[in-house]
Length: 197
Image (cartoon, rainbow, N blue to C red):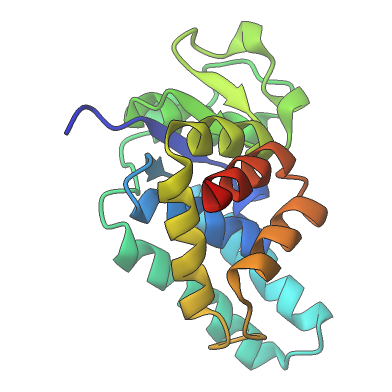
């Protein structure tokens, strides 16, 4: 087994539930190593709680579910949370100082990519040259391209897990949502091709 590509996942790509499940399922299949910081997880917990409340979940349950999600991520990816990034925060000169912690975590993790939907907040001139800044769409395309069959297996596992907290979804349902709701068109096309091949 060669060196596994490391990516730092920003809150913006972890917040959409099914997209998060897909990206993390790719990691479970060994496609890459995900990393994040305590600050990224704290942001995710905050936004998840707000999302549940907007959907009509009682505040106490919303807190419980958001805390539970982050705890489950920490359990599933015990080596993903990087430590010691704090001294680097504020050294990159990003347009939004609140994003500094993401780059700091990526540097400490030795990440080859930051995966974020806020591309404009991470201008290439301010990011170490060893780190690409990719949208979830680009990252999914690149990662699925390495092994579409593995990615399809990840979708199969997602289907088996579905129904626990939401509607039961088959693999086709999941592919449709990834393509239509999240725009992961190239990634889905490659997986469909692998399924038919």
